[in-house]
Amino acid sequence: MAKNALDVLRARGFIDWTSDDEGVKKLFDSGMVTAYVGFDPTADSLHVGHLIPLMGLAWLQKLGHRPIVLAGGGTGMIGDPSMKSTERNLLTMEQIAYNVECVKKQLAHFVSFDCGENSAILANNYDWLSAMNFLEFLRDVGKYFTVNKMIAKEHVRSRIEDPTKSLSFTEFSYSLLQSYDFYHLYNTYGCRLQMGGNDQQGNITSGIDFIRKHEEGALVYGGTNPLLLTSAGHKFGKTEGGAVWLDPAKTTPYQFYQFWVNSEDATIEKTLKFFTFLPLEEIDEIVARHMQAPEKREAQRVLAYEITKIVHGEKVADNVRHASEILFGAAFTPEDLTEDMLHTLAAETPCGKVAALPKPLADVLAEVGACKSKGEAKRLIAGGGVSVNGVRADEKTALEEKDVLCGYYSLVRLGKKKYFMVGRS
Image 1: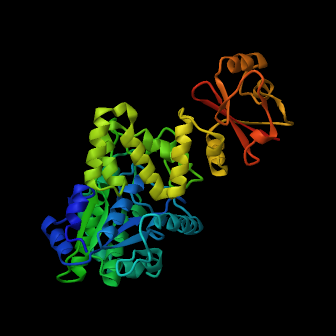
Image 2 (image 1 turned 90 degrees about the vertical axis):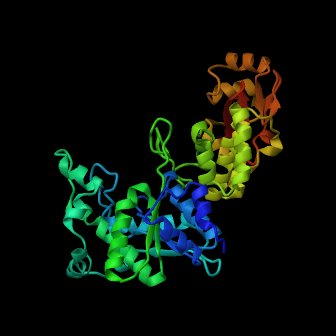
Image 3 (image 1 turned 30 degrees about the vertical axis):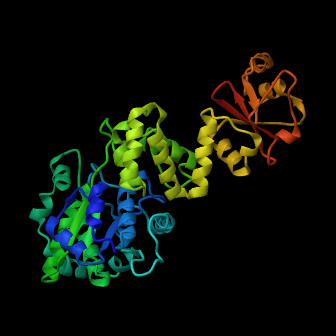
């Protein structure tokens, strides 16, 4: 058991606010802490925006404490109004159930559900919220909340006071449901700490108040993670194409890796602390080297590899790192083009197929659209600007069956950074 777990979490940036600094410190000094974070399954995948609380739970477990991952099968049917200017579209029970099952698989990349005393717990609040009827909810939960206090919350007041917006009773009641979740986890698992993003402060304090009203002398606390923003003030994890997903079917591992390679210098130290398990001393050394030669993007490449390894596994991380090196100009040989590598490259580069081989390379490049014409292809080849599977081509080069590796593709480089995959139809 690490006695300085709270200090480690603070040093890595995971704790931005607590409901009671001294109380939380004593809680961690007292022994194994059970803490939870909730995730509403509004989609069938988590995204990069969920990573700070997920990594916070992962670090909590590494430091000897017990994480609870709460899938909001019940609250997800309503939607948290915090930080939202409009009401969410309500999902069906079938959609929520499907999303929960998908998200469960991703959570196992961050916490272990079978590691002894501090094994993570996966709970679904649909299990207890669905068992309550409306009268029970009003009597056992609703009477402990004042409308005056709920209206005073910024995200509620902003929606009520703006004539162009609205807040339904459904969303208005979300805070009560989250408070009851904390109460249930406290009584069932001895959970005494709720964590989440900074936008959850209001909901967390409501839960603390609710428990203390129900359980005299209960010592429960809350802590929040910071909201990570880009230098332009945009929410971290959003791109022009939308969210960066953890599901490889939505965001390929290569695209996921490149997202991190493109991280800003201004946030690189924070992101290394948040999104890797590297010791702080090693991060300091990486950042120091990076500052001496930022154009090499060493820190970003370390970050990209480490978080891709956590989310997609070491084998995939090795593969996409090598694919990135190839596509950005590193030398390679046919032996580097394994079946997995070819599939990765084919997902990120233009592809075309020819009907029969062997065939002169210039003819192939024109046929599949890699070059506009045979003449252009011949000039490029003559200038030494074309290689096939890492081997430079010349005017006599023909594409043969043996060049179609693993029965899939040949990788043709045209110029310094343009690639084309050629296969057989």
